[in-house]
Image (cartoon, rainbow, N blue to C red; front, top):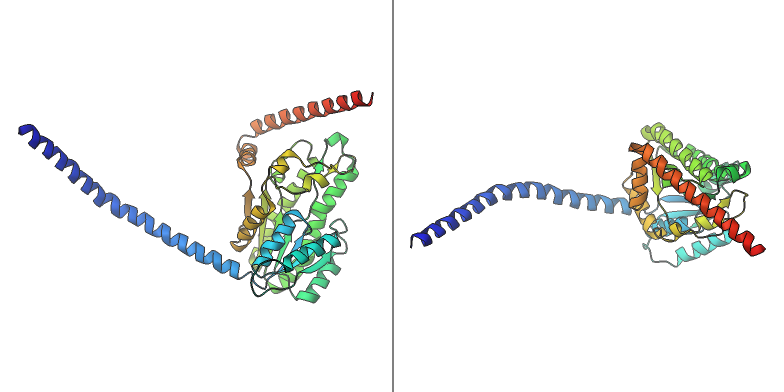
Length: 338
């Protein structure tokens, strides 16, 4: 009987301790949970409001004939924006325009506008911008998406290839930005988005021209952001990892020829639609910089920033491995030809 009373007493003590714990933990949990719930509800409402405000906005997108640019056109159009499609290939722009007109979107839509434009011919952009403004009356958002990649070792890459990559990725992009910026400054509103790359933060072997152009673009963006902040103009830099597009297919080799191959890393990358959705969200929330990548590129960024000696070692090994692969490939080609 004594043992039963002792056991009962112990259980009652445990129960009282649990109640006491609940009396302390309960209010603390409530105090933490309620603000979190309110924050989530407020964030969702604010985000929805931002998406709704895209209706009627004029969005200029370069490189809009395929890949990420095409996906961005669909994403902005879905929310009622008037998209201006820019690219060298008019026929592909016509296809994208037709697809947009047949897509599901808000009731109130604006017909997409086509402006054939070659970023390498960056001295004529004033005329292109004047044409857009004569049609739309304003440019609210510029998406600098157009660009070209590069594959080749430094010693094997002609200076002409370096010039072509810089002309498109950097000079063409900043020239169009400056042409549109003048109107944004007059109206004291606007949003400029630069689609950079993880390779603009961590340079890879065999990508010297491409990485250099994206490094330059990142620096330009940081300067611009600071200068226009007081003018109600926002600057967002998007730093994506690999996206499943034709970028590697159209990349220039050291000799200036098309790479013509879909790299394994590119093929396994994010879909353009996924990235476009994140970018539009970043525009709505006015993010200054956003990295959209898998874990490995983020690790590389971390190493370059905080453990550079380790990053240098990894890149040296990668370059050596790439060099050996090229030598083996050349040897096999010689054997076949003989």
